[in-house]
Image (tube, rainbow, N blue to C red; front, top):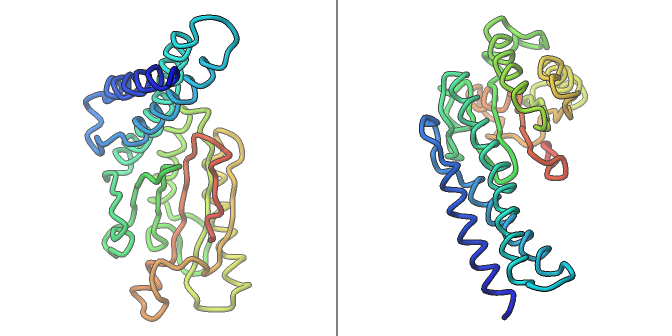
Length: 236
């Protein structure tokens, strides 16, 4: 019970701090869920560390540790929220966390926030000619915009994955998806070489039973992580 009060106080302070990070002007997505989660997690971890540190006044140490943890966790969360909004604005779109957005053939670019990352989907029809891994000029301009923004966030870990439809053999599509992912990865290597993977026609967005659905499945996805340990296999 001695630890409960400082932890509760620290957690409340965390959400107050997360509110402080909710700056105006980033109008694409103002939910800032990542900021709040990071602040709360940091508060609890900081409180535990402070409480378990040897010495007197453990409750005070827990509160101080919680506040510091909240500040750090909230700052990381805010950074990822800010990146999502800045990238969406640079790409001429908004942050869209609706899972059905990926099934809308009118959307060439989709920026969303998952629990662990900012995710950008680039549709194949605006990226590459059929069977090619050379970026079209308009697509290169878009990728370059993302690369420019990443220079402001040197701690961000980048992942890139290529996906195809099921026309042709699995091995052919594996090679094509890898080459396309590498083309995008080369342009985004401002914070070090991104984690790059080709997924062939695994993890299809829609059944490969029509030309419209196959077009949905042909894509490159870019993932921005605050923590390398949070990275997941994009092909699964």
